[in-house]
Length: 277
Image (cartoon, rainbow, N blue to C red):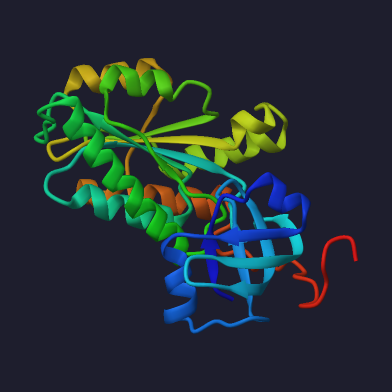
């Protein structure tokens, strides 16, 4: 079923309907060729889905009646924040798109000592961040996310470490690390959660720290470890910066999240069912 993100008006919700405006109107009417009586899924971007039936269509808006409301069934139980050292060219856009598909909750671009990309002004950083968030939105639409993952504005390395506080598991894939087993770290974390050693919320929050091309310098690596990031090896091969975060996030999602689990399906109700009737 076609899925779109929208911010429902509280008054509309009280009346059991949602009004769609903006570019999605054209997509629904002219691309999908939808008509009155067709069903859609609308998501508020914060984890709530609305199954709706189109009731009115005009040139600039669509009014749909809510048939069912419930939590999104596509969001994982683990919240991953990727702290990504900003790579060159358009690699950051690739990382954002693919991480949203995998299920990452938040992406924080990090400026490190070896970062090649520099922002000439605050306005440049804001423009780039706006573009990154548009990419996240489009990826969220395409892969049926229940939220639109946030791409934060670029931060310096020390600020990234501060933002990572409060995560129950902090992973630091490091090319100089030869013994820290990624597999064992995940196994130990899962066992600790099962034993109640982590608070439920903190235990479900995972931070991943990835360096740019050239990696982190030794001082940054020491700071990361001192702040609670666990250095791990990803094996005998060196992964590119745009690959490493995707690999780590995928493995975490498989081991601690819902990747590979049976698909959960929420009862969408009947097409003619309306709230209060």
